[in-house]
Amino acid sequence: MLTIKLAFRNITHAGIRTWLNVFVLSFAFVLIVFTEGFYDGMAQQIKDAMINSEIGGGQFWQKDYDPYDPFSIEQSHSLVPANINDEVKKGNALAVLVVSAAIFPRGHVQSALIKGIDPEQKIINIPSAVLDNNADTNSIPGLIGAKMANNTGLNKGDFVSVRWRNIHGTFDAADIKIVEIMNTDVQSIDRDQIWIPLNKLQSMLQAPGQATIITMKKNIVNIPSGVPEFVFHNHDYLFKDINDNLNRKKISSALMYILLLSMALLAVFDTQVLAIFRRRKEIGTLMALGMTRWNIISLFTLEGSLLGILAFVSGMIYGVPLLAFLAKTGVGLPSMVQSVGSSIPTTLYPKYGIRLYIITTMILFFSVIIVSFLPTRRITKLKPTDALRGKLS
Amino acid sequence: MDNNKIIIVDNLIKDYSMGSSFFRALNDISFSAKKGEFTGLVGPSGSGKTTLLNILGALDNPTQGDAVVLGKSVKSLSHKDAAQLRNHSIGFIFQTYNLLPVYTVFENVEFSLLLLKKGKEEREEAVMKALSWVGLTNKANSRPNQLSGGESQRVAVARAMVKNPEIVLADEPTANLDAENSHNIIRTMLKLNEELKTTFIFATHDEKVISYLHRKIVLNDGKIVNDLILN
Ligand SMILES: Nc1ncnc2c1ncn2[C@@H]1O[C@H](COP(=O)(O)OP(=O)(O)OP(=O)(O)O)[C@@H](O)[C@H]1O
Ligand SMILES: [Mg+2]
Image (cartoon, rainbow over all chains, first blue to last red; front, side, top):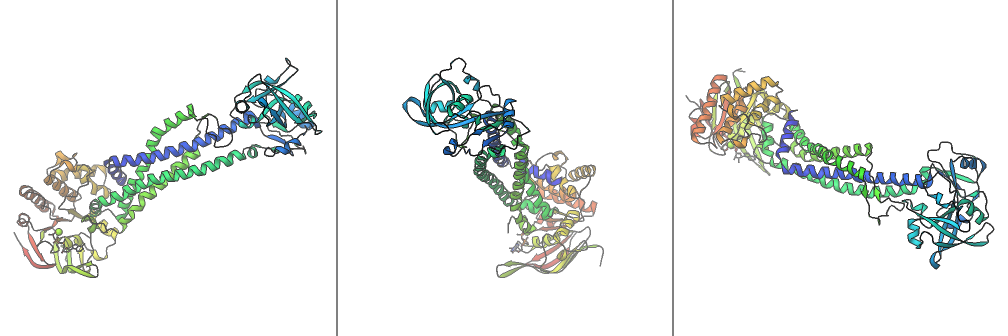
């Protein structure tokens, strides 16, 4: 108690120096929590968006389907197995047929994926209902994302020619009328693809009843089994790219944390060294009054550690409202930020986990205690008489 | 051993190493002091007064010989035991007062009692009594930087006396004070010596202090050259 009181007095007495240390430490603390929360929130948002708009509760892929191999797409469709088809009919699953095609927007040729989707589906968050084309039976209705529209120059109401090969290898061509342009953060349902009604695509391909991907409804528990033509991929598999990317980001930000924290800790270390140097006569006096070296070492270590505690407290005082505010209103991102590769929403909502909070706090305290303690080792060799004379051996 | 002798110095030698050679600051010192003495170590600058006082206060170790303080051999005390001895039985008064700047007058005086783990009420009573001895009860809440030199040294006396130690060691306590304050402080100490039978050992060359001493041990070049009982 005695040491705590004296330590507290000493650091408050040190004035501006103390507050600078506290500020730098708490700034590092808040920034680390924020950045981590930012990435976690981003990951969560991307994943939520993907679950809602693309992958639902996991996907069956036709066994030859490989999204990174455009040539595999020619072969990667099979008849939807009966037990999966039951789920599709019950509204628990969605069959999507994927075909690679050449499209000719405004006279240019470009490759694209044509995806067939049931216009009445409720599994994923795509406005497929616009493809319900009882009104116009002559043209094929198509739905594209805003990025695709941007990329191709296609507008709502435009026609675009497509050329594809049916399952017999014969080229065929038709025109698709863009009936809607949707806004989505999920690039993998937007870039280089056109959504059309599933039955249209199946007949274009002469592949009735076939599909490439079966997306299960979100939160589905019973995944059909015994389907040799299709392989089920759960979230872990489907999020692998995102997780890898995020981990890379986290490693590079960890370097930033280390740098930031090191600077803050260096300031504490420096303060400690200076304090011991300036107060050597006081150290001698404390020894004369009957304090042991260890009492005094604990006093100085405590003084330094109190900086950590004050940093924590002040970090809470300005950090909690600030971070809570940002978590609520979100952080606007410039649209050019696309470094994570997949879809980044334009407004990010940081998410602060309790684990992150505890770990950061522990690291802060632990490292502050260490840098507060290290300079005090000089005291172990300090003779009381030298200290009183203002000497530091 | 005479129980009255609370300090026994026996063939004490203190060398300071100076690189490869050494400097003999105390050369074969022997004397003893009884409880209640009011004694000064007197001598020119560099004669070894502070060195001797520090050894008596277990702040430093003899090179040869020993000083036995309150039955404890300074030579063989561990760092911790030395701290204990100082904490319980020895009060220090320094030329430069050495008050803790972050504490109030009251807290500075209270500090030793906190180290001794005394209870709150006992502490408050003892601190106020010590402050009344030195006439500073009205400054209890002041900070050291708000005090004059004389007042600071009176706080230091109160701090040394508050735990009622057997021995008070005072190194040039008046060196930074004017004549009036010097007399004032030394009279206060003399009064406490008479009332509480506390043993006072001074290191000084201040004639004002010397005029109050009951015994004068004269040092020169690390040796005792004279040991006089005064009145
Ligand atoms: N730590 C030290 N290292 C080396 N020499 C020292 C040390 N401390 C004291 N001395 C030397 O020992 C001698 C005695 O010093 P001391 O401080 O005891 O003298 P003093 O009688 O108190 O003098 P003053 O009246 O100036 O305070 C001096 O010559 C001093 O230079
Ligand atoms: Mg001296």
